[in-house]
Length: 228
Image: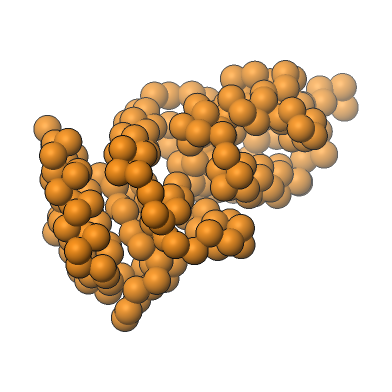
């Protein structure tokens, strides 16, 4: 079965070029020319992944993604943008983006990123439950719960935490996380990893026995103090 891709891009020529390249690789592609049209098309196209520009009329890419996430839609999202400032990249991940590719880009890299996101999304059916201090982490449903509440986290947050849980009390190199989850170890992906680590630390901050330790220049380690 072919995967559906919703492409939200206001530059008509670029949108057609991207759509042609993706269709040539076996994907079904529908094009929207701004975020408002993207929201309308999502309702009936049911995409497996969304590729969206940021700077668009009517409804920009950031606002478009924020609206999707408010509706509880967790489809993987890849940002395309000429905006490469670190604050833009970080903001894209903070509001629920899963990947960020800077314009101009190589079409082969775009296709590789799309396949990587689809591959990771397919793994959500795998069941992995970990006890982390007073918390229970269910990576199959992307939830972290304690005795008081259950919190839904993004797929990428779940992926990062799963990498750490598989190696509890061991340092996982940043490079291995970036290559496994993003497909590439670069500055922009490193910025996004730091964002997700910060989010996870905030969740676990109510349990002093749980720490995500940063070994500067090397990677991260999930530690659980069981002596208390």
